[in-house]
Length: 227
Image (tube, rainbow, N blue to C red):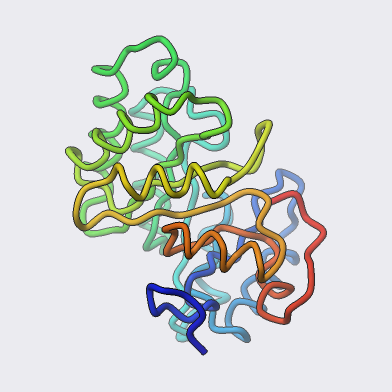
């Protein structure tokens, strides 16, 4: 069933997510089994579990997404690029990377661009999503990042890690949608726990949702996770 103005079935907008540092292999496999059962777009896991997730969703059509430089974004660009390369070698077909927030807040836009370009170079042929952590940024930062991501040629801009002081807001999703160039999309993540919120995010401009409450959302209930 299609519920949004973008004609995307709700389940196919969901990146079913487990990024807690204490997540076990059994929990990752269970996540993958849920994603296969509900035909979600992807599972999103830490890079150390990419191989496990790739095996668990094999043959299903569910994609494996790995976060890199997560959740701080403060590591060297080369480290993010290397992590992305390893994740891709182990089966990831989507990469979610965190911007270097300190550089953004310092106004070091050349450093931000260099970081994004390093990860983009390492992810050729793979969908790249860039996480902003919008709760820590001003509107002008968000707009500038959207313009830079358009120039670098990433595929998605993403609101949040789910590990900071706030998650996705409708206003930030709408601003990002308005600020990106043709061909880019928006992923909303952080605090999306029910169907109503999921649909509102998509109506605001998101075409992908990062959430650990995917099953609850498609079943019409409310998840209890922070992400």
